[in-house]
Image 1 (tube, one colour):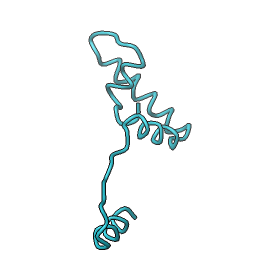
Image 2 (cartoon, rainbow, N blue to C red):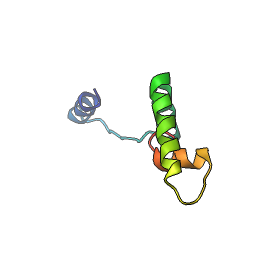
Image 3 (tube, rainbow, N blue to C red):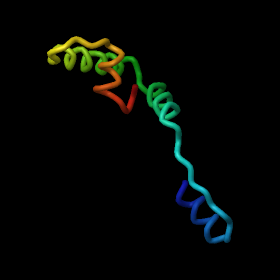
Length: 71
C-alpha cells in the first residue's frame, strides 16, 4: 500500500516525505496484538533467561533486554 502511494505521489510530481513510526508507538501496537497465550510464553522465556544470569535484575529490565522489540 505504501509503495503504491509513494509511486502515485512521485509520478504525479508531488513532493513526498517519508516518516518513521516512533518506537513507543510501535511497541504499543505490537503489545496490543499479543494474545494471552503468547504473553504467557514471553513471560516464561523472560523468567528462564533470568535464571541463567549471574546477577539478579528486575523483571522490567529483563523484559526490555531480552525482548526489546516488544517492551
